[in-house]
Image (cartoon, rainbow, N blue to C red):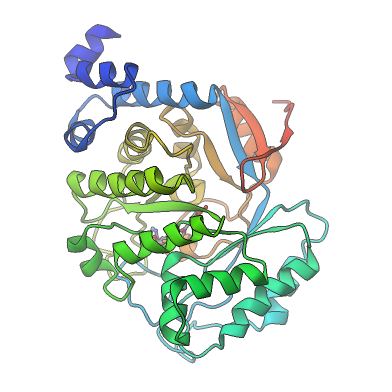
Length: 369
Ligand code: V47
């Protein structure tokens, strides 16, 4: 391997990793620029195995999107509709959203993941009642709901501080925050793609506050559009900095840009090799974040499975009811059963473990081929 590392120009990075010396900004850019993807992947896999050996996590979850009405006009979004009444706009009643969870009474779900549009007219009680209803239906279920962007929007709309919003949602049953809305932190990209969203500092500050309140969060990065390698590394380093402060980030989730039915449809989707590389560099740069997740709905199932040798130790979960990516052109199934996930993991030579949202192991599967 030494000669391969030498040819790839990555010996010094391998040595730093061996000595547990942190990689810096330039190292990150070099990992993106190095042509030899397999060597980058090999390094990332070493870091993955140091932390998790072959263990690979997934959970039994459901995704619900209560409304797609959204005052923001993010260029990459195919899901949102600006106003109630616009073609395709929907807002479910609380009873309709709860009914979706009730319909899954037979499934041993452990998590509900909710992301909504930024709806201008709903009362705050819609969200608190939504959470309370979920807990009434399934008292033990973990509620991973509302991105930091939604928290900022609620604070501005309802005249509360970010912390007040988080406290009130927590009292109503919120357990953790999903990682959506991070997009790319660099101002150049964020103002072009997602001008209406809260800026990077506020996104990170909301995660900081959530951590101080005892909640865990995930952080994403939308890649494969107009961002540079430098901007990707900058994004990762801002997450690393937050994590040094709080330790509350559970997983980093790169999200592959999907170009269908949105204002960026002229751009191609990222390639498989780019997807593998982003996950691998994420593992290498984010030395303090425990898990790197390949969201199979975004990467595609085959790439997610291959990524288990490129730094990834988590495949999200069963998902079910996904719309954001399928409206943007994802060709994956919208759901996978635990058995399907386990088969994928075993076929990749890894060990499947069903986890809850906080990475407590629920079941270690012995899966037949
Ligand atoms: O923030 C929207 C992205 C995110 C497109 O926390 C798009 O466990 C690609 O955050 N192409 C929402 N991406 C999804 C999300 C998520 C996913 C999986 C796990 C977790 C977690 C969180 O979806 C948005 C945005 O970055 N998105 N449109 C698109 N056309």
